[in-house]
Image (cartoon, rainbow, N blue to C red):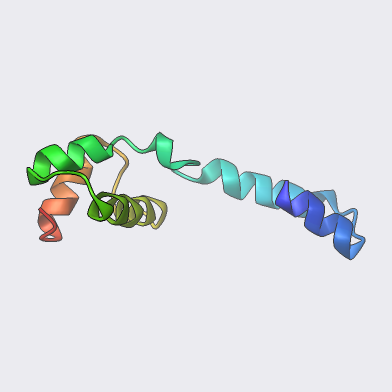
Length: 88
């Protein structure tokens, strides 16, 4: 949607540009944080801590790592990655 608006603003009707961004979007390992195979509850259980701002910060780090291809979006892989990064 953003690309459509951008193309409209700059006065371009290049469908290839739109296709390029659609393909990039489709290739993302997750499209939304809800697609992550981990929840804040998992983190609280693994860390044995109550919820708080740290959960949101950790989920952001995990989301970035998934998008950057550092870790596969599978619960056990994510837990292992956290332990390897000394996060747990």
